[in-house]
Image 1 (cartoon, rainbow, N blue to C red):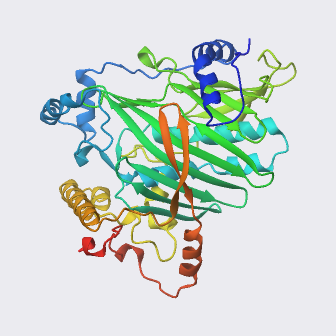
Image 2 (spheres, rainbow, N blue to C red; image 1 turned 180 degrees about the horizontal axis):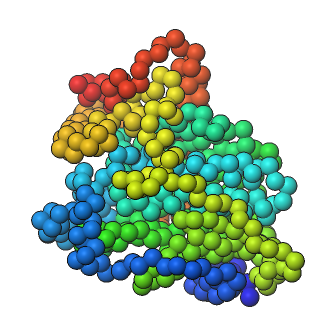
Image 3 (cartoon, rainbow, N blue to C red; image 1 turned 135 degrees about the vertical axis):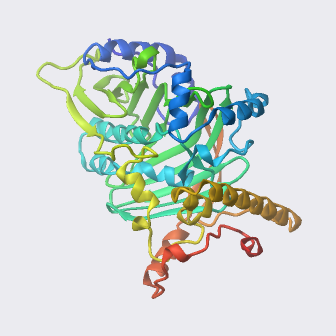
Amino acid sequence: MAPNDPKNGGGGGSGFFASIASSISSLGSAMSKSVNGLVGYEGLEVINPEGSTEDAAEEANRGRWKQEDRDGYWKMMQKYIGSDVTSMVTLPVIIFEPMTMLQKMAELMEYSHLLDMADKTDDPYMRMVYASSWAISVYYAFQRTWKPFNPILGETYEMANYNGVNFISEQVSHHPPMSAGHAENEHFTYDCTSKLKTKFLGNSIDVYPVGRTRVTLKRDGVVLDLVPPLTKVHNLIFGRTWVDSPGEMIMTNLTTGDKVVLYFQPCGWFGSGRYEVDGYVYNASEEPKILMTGKWNESMSYQQCDGEGEPLPGTELKEVWKLADVPKDDKYQYTHFAHKINSFDTAPKNLLPSDSRLRPDRYALEMGDMSKSGNEKSSLEERQRAEKRTRQEKEQSFTPKWFDITEEVTPTPWGDLEVYQFNGKYLEHREAADKSEDNTDPKSIPFNPWQFQDMST
């Protein structure tokens, strides 16, 4: 039987989230029974949720924690159990990857062709299949256990004309840490305000995606709203670190009331259920129209279904998204696209000096100089604190360049969110920069996100 969740329509309203909260338990149970009964998966990855000494040794060999590092850090971190440690704790670069959170936001654009297809189709339910598969596609990248650098206030990241997509993100707040992003091509616009909230649980941490993601499909003006599940990072200090995202992803068509509810199975012992995603596309009348199933690290498929959620006779399961080839034995588990994000190949002409690629700590880590990376990271953080003191002395507040804060406060399952919107000024800047005859090598540009220029010296 199809799950019977009350749908009140709308995305981001209190009624919508109240209805989701009231049905979340039965919904997940029904989905796992109905869809998993249709399609089985073979092969399980052995995961020990509690960790072990063998896992710890393997992590050390991968360049992570040595035993003495673990013991010392564990003593320091115990006092933070139960706290939000998003920007409270200074972390060693040994656990970092050479990428910032602003760059990680851009990884959603790897399979942007799915949004192109959502815009092109005349089928309203296939539109939701394509769009929700796009949202799931980034989870392969999100499973990386290396931590990205926290952006400096005013830091940006630009990606120019990748498969026709232009992307800009900016760190708009430091306390609490908030980022805003905008992407666009001929078929869609993507807008996101992100405020991470965490809860440190000892050897694990819960990451709550307090954010608002909106996609507008240009042909019909359809607006899609995305609410992702939380993420759990296990075995932070002891054992083999691994990531899971149990719970529900909800994508709502705010224009028509159609929606997708996909249940991410939690990982059990020996990896049972890990990666599996099951759910349905519903119409505005709460009727299931298409079932979806797959693994967020491999592929997603769909099949037409009846009002009870069962496959329609004469239909078959069809693949809609499949993971592209990835590099083998990559140190940071990067995809080919992630390497492009980190390179200057995707950088526009006259790159903004605030761009993440130019961070000296990130670059030093990419070059394998961990000591220099740590020193540069400490220097940037101290300069950020110095700029804050200067700003307070001048009685000025920080003002983002490319995004404006709105009066809108939107509710999320994990707290309220102040919404930033793209102000369009970047498009004017980019047009002028592209016409400029300045051909400075972007690698030679000093990193400078500072609001007060004396902070860059």
